[in-house]
Length: 274
Image 1 (tube, rainbow, N blue to C red):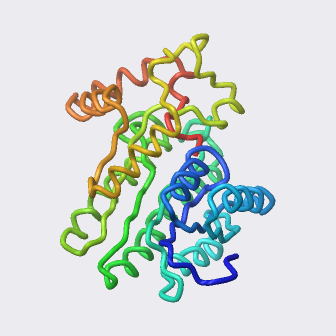
Image 2: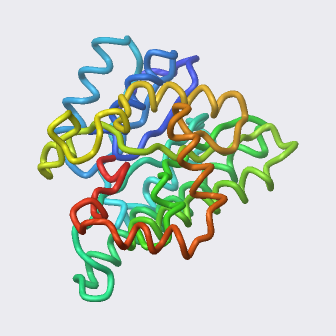
């Protein structure tokens, strides 16, 4: 934890030890932010914090929490809402994918997915903006996905659709307060999740390498959009085109096309490696 007050702004990142979360932490540290890093694994948190302190010279506070646990989530919410040590930027990134169908999957797994991908985003966004609005300054970045535009993408798509609509609603409510909310809707991003799951991102994959995004490009583009006050961020022109098509096509058609794909392709969630 920080041993002395700092004049730098502070960003809190959930799921900060791997994938997009680790990249957000690095990018924000490089932009001059002190950090609060949140994840379940204490050892990985401490390693991440030590690396960030050494490389960027910023203060890094470690907060171990499983966001599916309501008591742990409340501890994170209290930190986000602190007036003694304000959080200027919240990045709701923590998440995971399930390689199972909704109707015959394990109920506890789907409940945990809802708690992490939806309830935690709701609770922390509310805690953050409740503290930021009186100060007249702050930013909330919620990690959605292009999958949230796809009816038929399983529980993951449903969860990301919630994140998208919640954030756009919040951005509208915050207009004129000085506080900004942005949802990033990336496509397929190269992260360690895909390697662990056997989902390659190179030319040997059934998916063309052209649709895969570099993790730093996604992070930098979405942070730029956040600080510019844009409510929706879709990194790269090709994925902007995909999201536009998904948005204007009849939902029944999108669902039929998606459900007509091989099951392995359907279960490749674009940003499930958070």
